[in-house]
Image (cartoon, rainbow over all chains, first blue to last red):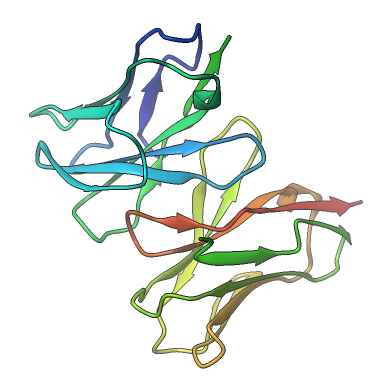
Length: 112
Length: 109
């Protein structure tokens, strides 16, 4: 077990709605990254948070935003949901920047 | 633009055989080349990784071969077992990972 837990495990939303996904990092990990994994594809990097500050962002629009809290848990928020946002969203934590990451089992988001 | 190209897309190997998955990359700025294993319904798990100062790394039945000049690296699974059936991803970097498209491995018993 990696110790990275994500909630909820599954979620169904409709186009235009907003969603918040949550991640509890492994104990002692101050860095968290979020990835989007579309069906049949590799994960794509969304952004990373280090000590509560955004520390790098992939090619995702501003409607994808995040937060990291003092206890290093994290949220991913997506506004104005689109059908293409249907994917598995993965959270990964590490002990510091540039350290190997440990992934949670993800949240499966379906957009109708 | 695809920074890392992974092949094959899928692979079927007999139990006891050798599974080989290949990746080619473009950006030489990366200095950490991991392989991840993902089972259905689970997140990716780090399997083995290599840095470019060595050409090969072995951990149990898993070996990474690295060719810096060709900008290629590969995963070899020796004595493949049905429990190895999973999707395998090569990646670039330690965090802010760039993943390949994945290889679905099926080991037939």
